[in-house]
Length: 262
Image (cartoon, rainbow, N blue to C red; front, side, top):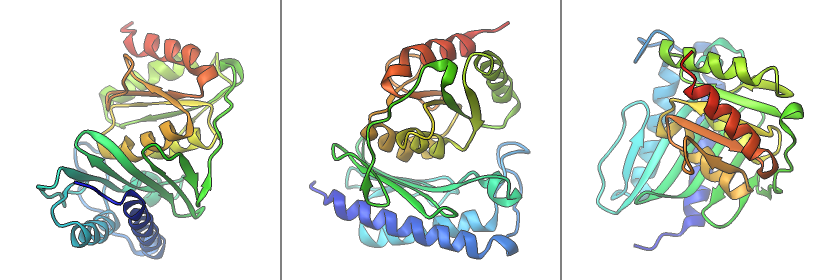
């Protein structure tokens, strides 16, 4: 089934901006819900309203598409296309006012990502990509990332804040911090698109969900970021990204730290 990917990208960007505006408008009146998987897995009524806004519009445009969405508004489909939506990646940053967050929308054809949008509402930045068409920031092409050596590199770190993952993340940070230029903890989608924009030289994400990384990964790949995990393919368990000149050095360090059980 043919699909106008540019039109899909444009709609996703429009919806991400609308959801981001809703988040800014309702930030002072948000209401928290019960934690989900663990005490640090928080959700607000704004997460849910943002997801509903996106899902309703996507379903109206392509009613046969499947939808996988973090807050439970998913649908089965029959078209072979599926949307992967994180309406608010970085909820804890959002509710605590301590850091950035984003709206993430990706479109898959089967198992292949074809369209991606990550919107950061406060900065008004919309990162996007169409499979094979390069990566963009607010409509302008992103240049290939230059990168750095590890001792000078700024490395992003993202992880789910459950006890087991925090323990693994602690091992990675303990190994990386002394040998890298510095590290930053950022939500997974922004970790990836900041690599695409050259703001981070590399990064890693531990124990994510597909909606956390689907959009950011396509944008990073289209910008020239090298992606992998324990092997050549990245997974939700481990995603490593880096500019090409940093890739071997960073990937080796991260894999050693993640696999170290001492």
